[in-house]
Amino acid sequence: KAGVTQTPRYLIKTRGQQVTLSCSPISGHRSVSWYQQTPGQGLQFLFEYFSETQRNKGNFPGRFSGRQFSNSRSEMNVSTLELGDSALYLCASSLVGTGGTEAFFGQGTRLTVV
Amino acid sequence: QQQVKQSPQSLIVQKGGISIINCAYENTAFDYFPWYQQFPGKGPALLIAIRPDVSEKKEGRFTISFNKSAKQFSLHIMDSQPGDSATYFCAASMDSARQLTFGSGTQLTVLP
Picture (cartoon, each protein chain N blue to C red):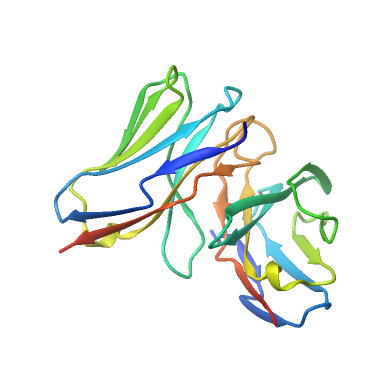
């Protein structure tokens, strides 16, 4: 069974540009969450999608957005990139949207903003 | 209220020793407490998780101890091996693993 797939693995962008990251969850998983990992702030929750609806959102500015498609694949977008957006962006998928189920993480997309 | 505090920041253990990492939380609404292991260049991988209705859970060499009254939980790695050298994160959430609040991480080094 394939794991969570994130593309691309590495990305270099210039300040002011926008970027779109993609996440394909484990087959059958309908909940997809996104996290930002930085050395200074650690792992921080961005948002969670279930059945194409955003159900939870972390404390990030509106420049960070996402969406989920009918096949459960998800994308996150960051507009007007800032140097501080450089981070590892992680996607996690869960089997169902409610109840205590495990979150499985992808390998992440390393975004560098220059 | 949402914070999870993790200690120590780094830990060095001899091969065969016991590694102990501690976490404390404030939000009593948290009801799911997983531990993740992360190797460089990889995403976090779930090691073991516990719910507050049990005080201890063991899976192989990994044990979670949970103290609900103290709002603390810890990870014990028995017979630590060099291959266990990684960063370990505790986490907590309300209502499933959808929105995890992570601790700051512990970098574990197991010396051969």
